[in-house]
Length: 443
Image 1 (cartoon, rainbow, N blue to C red):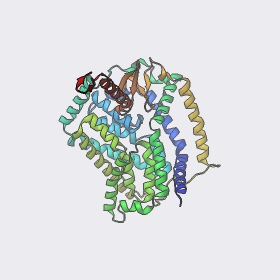
Image 2 (image 1 turned 90 degrees about the vertical axis):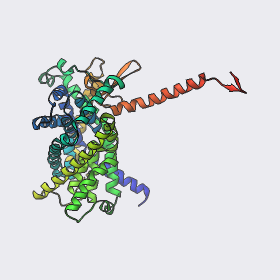
Image 3 (image 1 turned 90 degrees about the horizontal axis):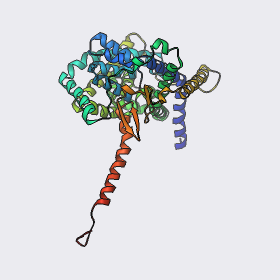
Image 4 (image 1 turned 30 degrees about the horizontal axis):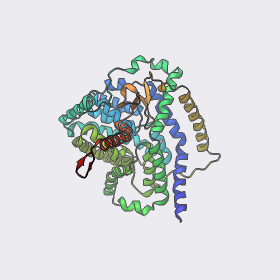
């Protein structure tokens, strides 16, 4: 095989994975955008003050309807926590908003089979139950208090870009029953749909490209050399523990890790290892650095251990439950068969999805209340996410305009070149103003 052939096979495999799931992505993000537009986040904040089972159930539900990428989910969880939500409830919200979501389930179903889609929700429930039991017992209350004080202190003194407004923008809006019948409400929904897709476009593309090359070019023996096979329980345990480690170093988060999970399944990793890998999108290395900035080093390290353990145990427990129920697929080759254009349901559904997406985009461009300065919403100039101004995790003023960001991650990316430019300018001014010395005389 030539290099050109290998590259072509990798891209082709990734493309057909995307082709099989395009309609599902449009459907999932459209539903997610509608829910985000019509459900008040202020109600979420008022309901998450402790970690009782009832509260964690609410937190999980709010997370499910607040589908978002890992970066935005971590920022929103941080904001909820800073405004008084219980730390455990905030972590449960974050897990649910990236893992227990419609679009993830549909893509899992299409690429790996309905068993994996079902396992997402079964394993997610197990993982949330474990978090509710473990987090309050292994993370000291003093650490949590210090983390909250750290966030509030940064907001008041150290980081004026953080925004913690207490007013409720939803109170000024129409009730959801009226909003759902007016164009403005659906325009906001289309804004959330487009911004969510824009926000994780790189992760989605990276996921399909990496998965395409992994499925087409990486031989099965390589994966089998990494993952133990044929050793019963010990193979299952090693696979479930190693799955999150691959997620940490892969840098692929959100739905983008599903195609890679499909490649791993084809390569021989066990069922529980695939599930733990999919759940581990919240502990990729960039996110760990963000947690460190939010909560401090010691709490982040403890959170990493807890998440890793809970994701591994959740994946392993799901595998055992599915083994008892005889639900684990026997064929590891069940990975997005190469569907081609033609008279088949995938092509038809993709065509309908493209028409629907065109309508959503037209509504987004023609209505766009988020573009108005007095709107409740603003567009993150870095990732494109639609952000509620009063709940934006970060904002800054630039060239006379207030810019809002979905997370500190996007804020830092926006500010980095500006700070570099300012530093270079200050250095140039300093060099020009500094006196020069020639032959010992001062000039």
